[in-house]
Length: 164
Image (cartoon, rainbow, N blue to C red; front, side):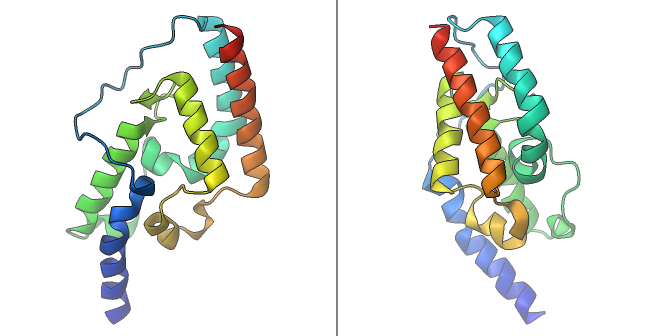
């Protein structure tokens, strides 16, 4: 039982480091994205089709528990305090980048900004946050998964820039 309380204390203390310390205004951001006018609907559909077939299966196991729809919350989600921290982290993650409805993602970034943010997170290996990694050891992208996601990002960025 002592280890359980230690784990909870560590979880709470590390909570400050979520999202790499990035701060948000706390204002609810409308999930609906304003699409860049220069990107055609067919280009966005192609980017999304590639996302759904090649990247979403990876993100389903690694990212969507916070940045998407969390269907099966873990047993410790019922613990008072832990539940509120988890819910807050999930809300914050979706405010930053909501992947619930595929690409284009919701949140506070534009399409190109979201893709560049994902690319940077992969290169810096700063997602998921450390307190999540502690409870979910296999949540970090493997080298092969990183390559697949980066290929999708680079192809998508090229498509978006082509339309400008």
